[in-house]
Image 1 (cartoon, helix red, strand yellow):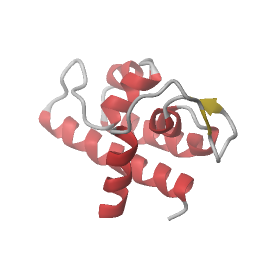
Image 2 (image 1 turned 180 degrees about the vertical axis):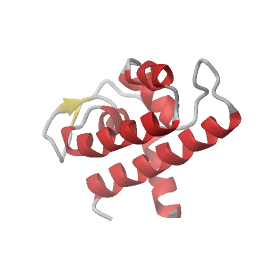
Image 3 (image 1 turned 135 degrees about the vertical axis):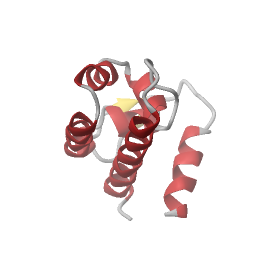
Image 4 (image 1 turned 90 degrees about the vertical axis):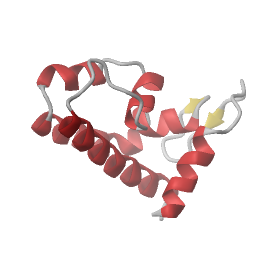
Length: 114
């Protein structure tokens, strides 16, 4: 699992460039690899749907809808642990982070084949 954390850190802390990249999984052209992988890539869509089903089972419907309506960058930040407005109760925060972590691991495994 440490390897996955290293990949997240490496992807997220890369310098921002105006250079586009082509996703090896879906062939889309984008600028931010991690944002694309977690929120836009068709190759991780099944895992993303599973994420929102899991969140819907544990969180208020309005909180899940708020998360769904965020732009991809903001949604990625929330998945990585940025505070969710309105601030969730402590148990909901823990559940959200656990579900988010599981999703991130699945998305990375799907995209990087490990």
